[in-house]
Image 1 (cartoon, rainbow, N blue to C red):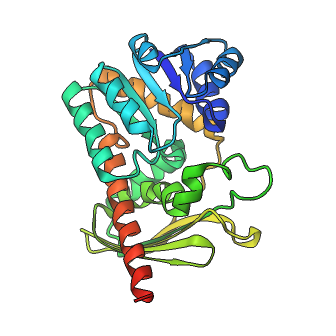
Image 2 (cartoon, rainbow, N blue to C red):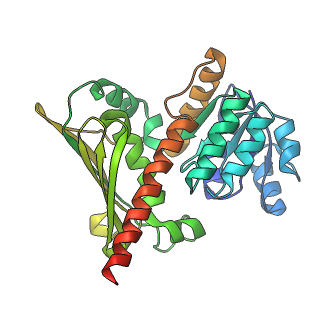
Length: 297
């Protein structure tokens, strides 16, 4: 499958790009970026060429791999879908529901395949675990995603959207990608912020189960950790850690998109699921903002 890579940042250079370049079933046609000099340098590193215009690269490929900020990603994804290109996108799909809906509508109209990359969901033993426990009866769950990206040398600490949106939008999608397949769609959302821009989210699922998410990207070193568990009448089960490199997981995501295209079937982590994640995050952000404003009335 002919792919184009869109983006030149750390994620494009160290995860998406190397995975695409190494994949035996991928022909990496080229790279486009908002900074032409960075696009040219990354293209050289990946053994391909840079394209000065995004639409020209879209026209030269079968699928796009997008490593752009979530405010930029939807517009490019819509143009690619309208051109009949399959989509390998990053989380979160968008930063608002209107943009997420527009991507879903474009994919539906075009009939193309899509995958949104949530790292742990593309670790084989984690994906197998989630499938195995999804049909059990659960009363609740808890997911803690406490990262620390603002220390010296962290490649994500200077990301403007991460600084603005924090852990809710950065690691929140990872937590939801583990919780939603097991506990099901969300009915009610409540949220509040705590120290270090930590967002605590309480979800009531349509199944009746209740889950609690603790999300931050500014945790002190002693509190950095990632843990998800589900509780039911048979006890507590813990989701295994995703212990493979992100570039390996992304290679599996490429496999999954190619397989979905070949079979003409939807993928569990397609843009519809990505839209479901965005809907929860939007409601959590709004509820946390309402509570914060109420404290100052």
